Amino acid sequence: MRRRDALRLIGATIPAVVIGSQRAFAEDNFKLAIGQRGNWENSVCELGQNAGFFKKHGVTLEILYTEGGGQTQQAVISGSADIGIGVGTYGVLGAFAKNAPIRIIGASMAGAHDLYWYAKADSQIQTIKDAAGKTVAYSTTGSSTHLVVLGLAKTLGVQFQAVATGSPPSTFTQVMSGQISVGWSSPPFAVEAVDRGQIRIVARGSDVPAFAGQTVRVMIANAASYQRRSEAYGRFMQAYRETLDWLYADPQALDAYAAWAGVTPALAKRVRDEFFPKKNLEPGRIIGLPELMEDAVTHKYLPAPLSPDRIKTLVVLGTT
Image (cartoon, rainbow, N blue to C red; front, side, top):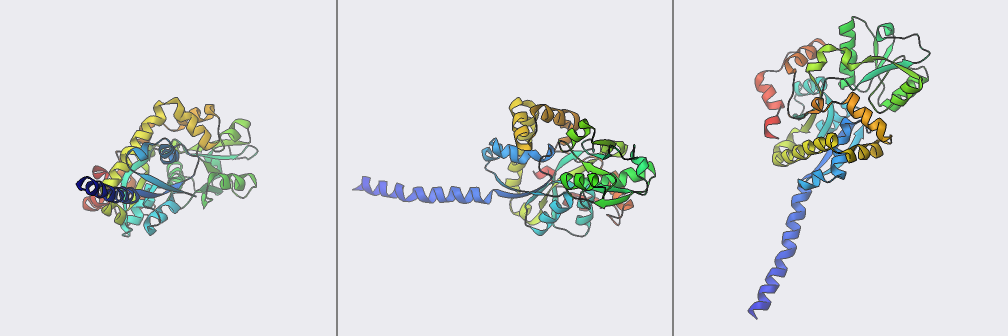
């Protein structure tokens, strides 16, 4: 009788344990907003989830792709996303200064080596200097592409008519139809069009020397979500780092990216090695923040540089 009672007791506790585990994993689900599907930098989370890195750390991801950093940031501010990947640092600084509920949990990209601007092959625009007074594209206001267009104008002393054109495919259509003089892109999109001679590259993000030592895109979290689940955010970042290591070390990761982005393995390798040096994607450090704040003030994203206490509130790398 005692044995049967004990078995009944064990049987009664099993569903409770399972339910408890399910609840724990449900609490560790993150909704992500990420700009530009297909971009190497933006592949980390989806490929990492497919390869099991996030599951290993008890994290599941729901991923929404956006038109750019501005939309990504707004999704996090509104609370419809817990995490935003690849958000322009200018936009984040400006939104935080206005008390937007966001925190920086990691760096997405240092420098702007991956971004480039192009014109139609039959255009008279040979370099970006020839685009003075013409329309030059960026994705969304506050994005890293917006930051580069402003930086190019400042560096070269040339004024453009900056126009938000959304994603690389929509921008390409606008350039080829003559609506925009200079478009923007990030590999792998339009690289083959360059090789075929349909378009020519007229500027790169690296043409703004100051950006080489600055984190131009960051990962952000909704402040309330972060405060409630900081430990889970730490596990998210651990899985992110492990995925990043895998992407640069395992040939099978290149095949996974190629299939995901719809490109050949050869182009996948070119995209990774030519446009996205691993050191530029290091998530654990934010560089050049004082200079970024100075430029943000110049471009009217910030009324004044943030105080050290405000920066300590905004940047929470040490706790993730």
